[in-house]
Image (tube, rainbow, N blue to C red; front, side, top):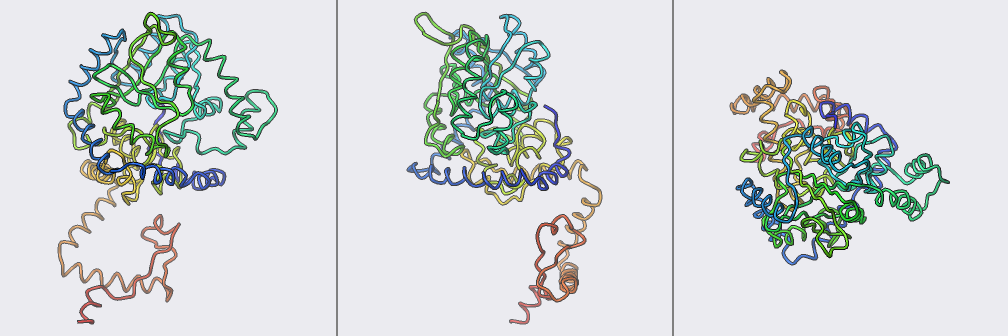
Length: 467
């Protein structure tokens, strides 16, 4: 997938000016937030569960190579083939090779963010293999000129009912419908033939269970089960950080994932796929492949950003982020939007390719508070900002201004003099009002909000007078 994170400011400005998008975002705003808030009250000890989940994920990351080897051994014992991919290009080579080996002409796909990272659909099409997205949101995006998703859980949250109705009528050649059950029925009728004629299924994986060699899949539409059970060949494409030790650990994490993602106690469909179809089985793949992907993850292991690999892809951070709620997901320019994307994109694609993303947050910590595995997202964003300054990636004027501020702040007398001058200047700039409409030195901060005018004296002066 093309990286557009270098253009975040321009992307964000365009999204803010998009009247239709702003209307759609206002409609969706808060729905996941309210549902999550209600769902976590079902747990007797939500904070204790978060702590336990964090410890499970940390235990794996401290010995990731050993857990991956154990998973490979168990999966192989059950008839699966485990392959490794360093990057997106290697993912595509593996999948295309598997498809050609088995004479595949059509592949049905369950939602997979890693296939988005790799640009897998384009690679399959180039090899003469038809990819069909079967998640309803992803299918809508695919028939809309392969539009990228704007959310990792609700990929088409940026569209409204009328847009989807127009798209279905135009693509399927059917009468326009605005009744949601009728639209979903139409999608089911179109996708059903693909399920029964595809030779290969492709999915992601929410978790890999080392003790059994299994993959756990969490969906709400049932398409995941169709993709994993009907085709003779199934390929799981997932990141190396998704492995967990035991089924008991899976049970723990599943108490948090659906509640944090969609506000459900459990998803509509929760599947555990272990090994290939055995004699007596009525369904399941005859050939099962796991492609375990690095694509930047190995470099994060053992680094000061390792906490980010705990992420279980619930989307809670973006659901609660005031920045994401205002501009949507496409402005972030790559697969992962919101606070998680502002950390993952620089780590996976290079900090030089995402200069603005560490600054695409207010550091209000709503994301950190709701993260089910307690990832300190604001702290990681701050560290990325520090890296940019250390590597001279920020504009020279900005770096000089920060150095000047640090020097002045370290000299109490000079700092006091500077603040006395500043508050008087700002009071004069307000022209007798209690607000400054546009502050020339930082116009981007004040175009959308007024800057409170100071009283005209510093705190020190006011405190001295009161004493």
